[in-house]
Length: 492
Ligand code: NAD
Image (cartoon, rainbow, N blue to C red; front, side):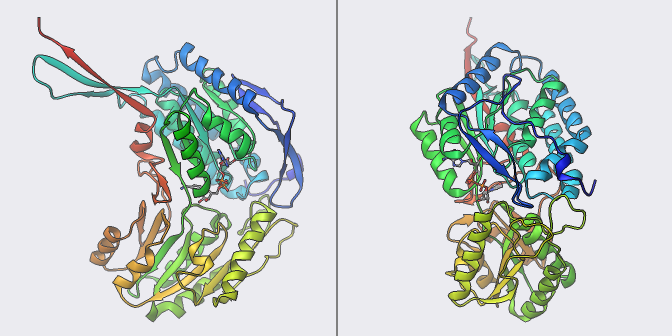
């Protein structure tokens, strides 16, 4: 699917609690399409009472349905069916995803929906793989750990990949036998509702997967503070992550998984093979989803000898992108999520220029066929580690360029004062690549590539203020379990 008519998409709104869509709440949030700024629907805001209803429902389902106690293979079977239903629903889910988000329909159909389904399938396969361990005790005792679900997991997701980010939270939680209350971003609240309906169709008991709608200040805060929430998993900004961690500490020392912001470097040495390909990779890593990706490669560190050649090629790749709405087949540069966010990007760019950065490309709104918030891919040279655009996560298509001479200098520049989410190293020298892998303080390092594959087994997560814990991999599954220690006296 490569296009659709935005007027043809029917929106169902509300919370999803106990297997039912509940469109109730005194206050509502208007939801706007980033592609053309049209307010196309609204969602109710879950207040404390609604959160209590949702969490209590989840807790009752956790206690009273057999989701946590049934044979794990049976839970796996239901989740595999859930994954199949998601994949088969792409013609409905993909336009729903694309309509109100920044995901172009072609990507939503070919990547977001199948990737969501495959993530659920991946975690279904963990359901009967980790049950605990027998401990090495002396023969008068039998010691063991038993893996158990937490109970109700509170999950909070961002807007940049609404389905995929939600699936990274809910799939391991459900496979481990938990109930979940998910709060999507108030800017992209609808596609996950379809996910919840498909979960019910697959056989997930009502109340095991719930959704509450609303903003962070009221709904998100009430969710993480609820006493029946046993663990919180969050993806979003570093600032919100810190507020959530504080709320979890204040209300029961709840464990948290935090996937937060980044300012990831792309380091290119002069010996990097196939410079044209490297340039395309680097351009793609900052313009994909218009740079609204946590692991966007936003800082180019390039060995001085090839700096001009590489920036020329990147500028050329930038110039070929076409801004447009998510429902148009020709779009290769989607919109920024909101008007205030587009203004914030421009403020950081202009402030960086005022402080000495030179503009090599972009630096302004991009023209598009619709009046959404589009921003041109932007290349800023002559920056320092103090430049606003280098220091702060922009979450837009803005790439800064810093030349270096030596490996040591590259390592020093790669280290960001605040973030450590990901990094890319491009070189033909394997020894140098490995020295960089060891030297860079970041949760993920890509060598001669940038971005993930469909290998769900490789976890993702940040160092420093980019986060705590992991999504994906075995780590994310284990983070949805708690381990009970048992010691049995076998003396007669
Ligand atoms: P955000 O922090 O503004 O919001 C994320 C979610 O938290 C939303 O659902 C929001 O309603 C909710 N929220 C806000 N305040 C809250 C509070 N006080 N208590 C509870 N919930 C609250 O982030 P965003 O703008 O939606 O997403 C962009 C950010 O997410 C970027 O910083 C990006 O790097 C990060 N991100 C990280 C990853 C990762 O894997 N590390 C992935 C995607 C996005």
